[in-house]
Image 1 (cartoon, helix red, strand yellow):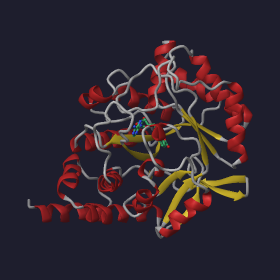
Image 2 (cartoon, helix red, strand yellow; image 1 turned 60 degrees about the horizontal axis):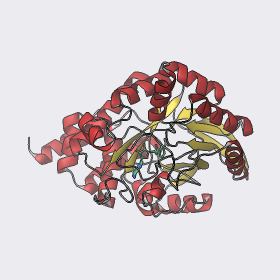
Image 3 (cartoon, protein in one colour; image 1 turned 90 degrees about the horizontal axis):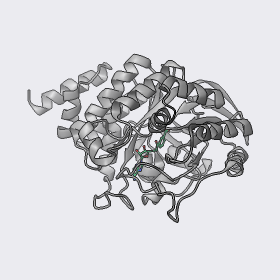
Length: 374
Ligand code: V47
């Protein structure tokens, strides 16, 4: 079949909401230009969300940068005795939560290093302190990699770990740690940490316990197109099984200060292609997030016309990307987010972590129904 008729066939599948195969994903990667990808992905995004673009009011807490792992893509981690190392104590945690509350945040996003001197209880207590300080704020915390580390520390099953965390106030899992599932690529960029199967098993267990979670893919380093498409297909398979994923976040690699600083960061072209292909392949994911912190506000704004329907949030105190050279501001105001969304021809809708509409009166807020139920 020639390229034009293959593209017609894919367009027909997009028109009738049929699933694209691995081979069709590869065809999109290798033969389809950016604007055609964008047009098809925008068609899917519009079918699901009309012209709405979501954002949330959130704050980050990275409780320590001390980490046992030495992932080559990470600029955030620190050795225990290095000058840049830090660890949050309880008053610092409470202060960050109160800051979140004073800004009207509906979510606190917690992710950090794996501190080898801290026991599992330290990580559980951190969630408990956050939750007790401000119970109405949703705690989205600990990636699959951290959950795997806790299982290693305690020698307990994932289910038990997650139950302790839920009991302490955990609301959902963020999507980090997925990187690229392919074992060979993982071996090159993060050889010692949780493998793809563990990440998938942890998210499956979380979904079985009623926790929602997100999924990410780190792209633009040493992976190839086939690894990205395989990653998307594996996520789609788990989503068929559990329906527990809420949003997919493609994460553009930032090389500065990392063990791969010789690489050039992905272009806006690659960023937009990856957003669009993700939207087309992940037919069972409601949301695709253009994480403005790493894409930059400009590319994230354009991504709203290339398949993305969410910009993440106000994101105060983000460190992981800023340590890796992200030039984006440390946070955006709600007015700035509204402006970005409106300029892209979309209607801004504030959502909470579980994608329920937020009704807001200044710092006071309440939530309505989920925007989509899948
Ligand atoms: O797993 C680390 C990535 C992730 C770099 O769930 C890097 O809503 C690029 O999970 N260049 C953590 N990427 C961040 C994360 C996340 C972010 C936003 C929203 C959500 C969500 C989750 O950051 C890590 C890794 O893949 N990362 N270093 C770097 N130099």
